[in-house]
Image 1: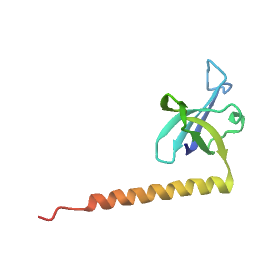
Image 2: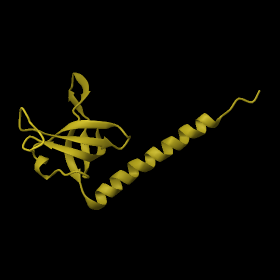
Image 3: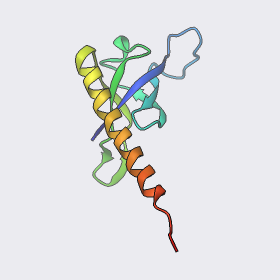
Image 4: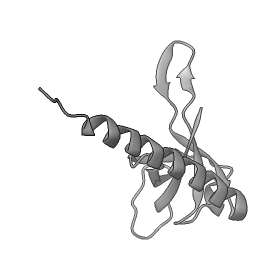
Length: 110
């Protein structure tokens, strides 16, 4: 399973504002469902990652014995595909909010 998100901030070990114990890269990612996570970034794509990028975060389990998700940025999605991906999840979120609002409007008539 993979979750789309948008990168707010990238934390690179070599950034002058960062003092790091290792040379990994992390990113603050706002997920499609309004959650906010700081995730590890796969080293293969870390140099290309920028603020504002649409990404896929790997939510597959860390191992077969653990349900804990990896939460690692594994893909950067660009242009038309990024817009398509974000819009489809946004539409799903809008529909869910409407369903919740409708279910809360039901009132007791006694």
